[in-house]
Length: 114
Image (cartoon, one colour):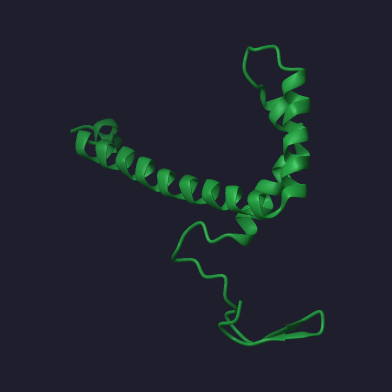
């Protein structure tokens, strides 16, 4: 085997990598969308602003598909998604609990509190 062949993935490695990407991407995307829908349902004013931004984009839509420029021109949507990712536990093994005792804005938080 030459050096170039040694650096290539075998068919099994390639299949394993594809499966890993599909499974991990599926779980995190599903979790993020579930939290997003829940948070929007709990905050009707946020949902209204979210919809208005999408309606504005749709009114200028020419049917060819959204461009990155149009996607990046949705600041409210981006903020809502970022806030969802900040607040929600997308990956269950990552905790949103304090790792140590600390004080923030005059509020004492104990280790393991949210």
